[in-house]
Every structure is written in structure tokens, then in C-alpha cells.
Length: 256
Image 1 (cartoon, rainbow, N blue to C red):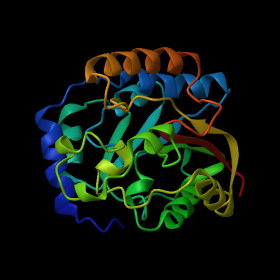
Image 2 (image 1 turned 60 degrees about the vertical axis):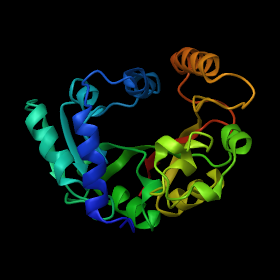
Image 3 (image 1 turned 180 degrees about the vertical axis):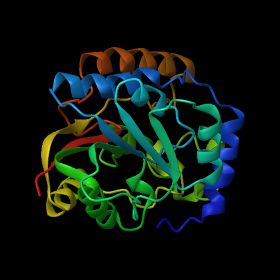
């Protein structure tokens, strides 16, 4: 369980709900994730989304898979999703990654994006994911990568701790959010997943989108270049063949 209490996440999601847009600016990323699975020949009927928030990715999962279960720690987020989404093949539920309320071997794929960096003990989460996945099922995850080029360029700025994210633009995004309490190196994520009964199908990082990076260049051209290049590169391949991208992305198969 995250050391940040439930009320903290409720307040965050209340802000998200107020500015909700069904067609998120990150829609191209959600489509790329599904396209990646298809390219790798990974087929599924029943999928689980851990940490669904207010459902920006759920929309795309529901149109590509037969049954979608989506969970989040926030009551507000789940209530919003139940009100907003009327898809008969989607079920929303309040739950945590550490205690999944499902039977063993229930799912073909688990999607867990921007989740495991928020928990105290990711090993418990991986064991739970392994338990509810079918043998041969897939965990598709993404977490911030503190080995990224952006993290090295932008730095940590520990004096910013506790300030609103809007006032921490100089920081690398992974350190902007104080709920990111579990930022590991790529080798540590791999080791933990392998010890939990998973094997790597494919992993890597994404690209650079956390602009601005360079203080003496105006923000706007950096933002434009990063956004355009990120869309183009993500279209070519969701996985970059290096360890310098902003997020570590892993596709792992349950072998137990």
C-alpha cells in the first residue's frame, strides 16, 4: 500500500474529473500499446487494467477486448468511470494492486501503467499479478525510468519537495510527483519480475517528451519538437532499443 493515504488520491482525481476529456491527448499512446500487442501476436479476451484512474485508456481497451476489469484505489475515480462508461463489457471496482479481488488465473493480460512507482512493496503487486494471470498471460507495465537521459539532464532538485507539480517544471517528471516513492533502476525491475515467476517477452524504454530540457532554449520550440518526434517514433516502435527513455516499459509472460 502506498504511504500516501486514500484521501490524497481522492483529491487528485477530483481535479482530473473536473478537466476530463474522453479523447485524451495521450490517445496515440493507448493505441500504440494495443498495436504493439497485435504486432507481437499476443491475443486476449479477458484483461485487467490496474490503476485505471478516470478511464482514459479504458475506452480503448473496451473496444479491443471481450471483457475488461478496471480497478483503482480511488472511490471518486471509480464512481466517475461507472457514470461515464456504459460499455457492457467493462466492470469497474475499487481495489489495490497489492490485493486484487479476483480468482486465480482470471486474465490474459494485465495493463499496469504508472502504478508500481506509487507502492511501497512492488514484489507483493507482482505476486498478485502473477496469481490472477493465466499461465502464459502477459503483464504490460510502464514506470518512470530514473536512468533516463531526461533525469540526468534535468536533475532532482530536492528543495522542490512538497511544492505543487506546476511549480516544479525544472525537475524530471519522475521526481515532480512526491507519490513516486518507488523509483527503481531497470535491472531492479527485471530482477523482481523474474523472481516473481515472469519472463521477459520484450522490454525497453520510450522516448523523450518531458520538455523543456535545456534552460537556455525557449520552452515552446522544445515542447513542439518533443511532442512531434514522440508521436512519430512511437508510431514506428513503442519500445526504444536503449535505456535512456523517460519510462521503462516491460512485457512479461507468466511462466508459472
